[in-house]
Length: 362
Image (cartoon, rainbow, N blue to C red; front, side):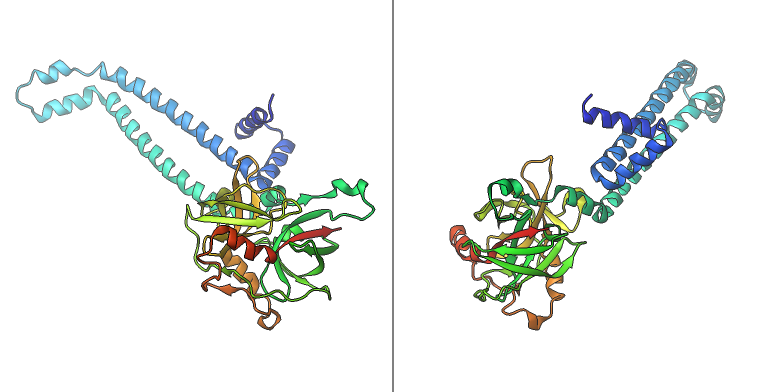
């Protein structure tokens, strides 16, 4: 039996009360930790309820058909002039059929209300997904394990890696919190292969954002940042691209915004149609004008080309947590980007020196 079929069988037993108390407890814990399983339970319950309602409708229809056979239609139609007594006799002779019809109308109203109520519940389920989706993102994070060369080199490799991008000229780098979580030491590497030691200056686990500060004395300040942060939300269908380090060289990913919400309606993120791989986490998501609209932080494991990016408003919130006098030539908000009007290859040339590989040691 496949895992999918086995899961559906467990869900049906759960809804029908056939599981043991300890099995119920374990399954409800699974629902709390996995929104996809929870959604399947809700969907299956709606299906079972709909089937029960449909069976009731068929039963009522059979009762109406049987009652209809008892109605004396010829007796009624033989009266040329209608009289109230005919209506009275009709009611008295066919009370059962009328009662069934009334029950049918009542059931129809209940079904309409149930559909409306279920729609509202689905909306609530999506609105509550922020906290649950943090667990899902931690399972699907785009962290690259580069430990495969451990036996071939005397130098201890980084255990995990991701991407990050400069938010000031004096070495503040923004990435995802899940990339650096639990790290003993952190380094960033630029496009020329030079590494610098960094430390965490700010972390936001809820919004999956971290800001690092280069502490290496050999680091020389970067020039003015070529991009700015977009204040407004990106529209569905808007062209976007990302730069990151799923391998040792910077990689361009190109696509478009496919939804204004992330997994299961999470309002923290956009869904973007961009092929990403482990190591892309923390890379900037930019529009055609060189404005940062988000930061890549995950992807849907069961859907090809469905990635997610934390929205730019949460990047701005993180930046506001760093004192202004600490950030030299900080990234601008909502201003015209120097990249605007340039072709994509020219934009990438100017951006790649400000995008870093993040190396995690623990």
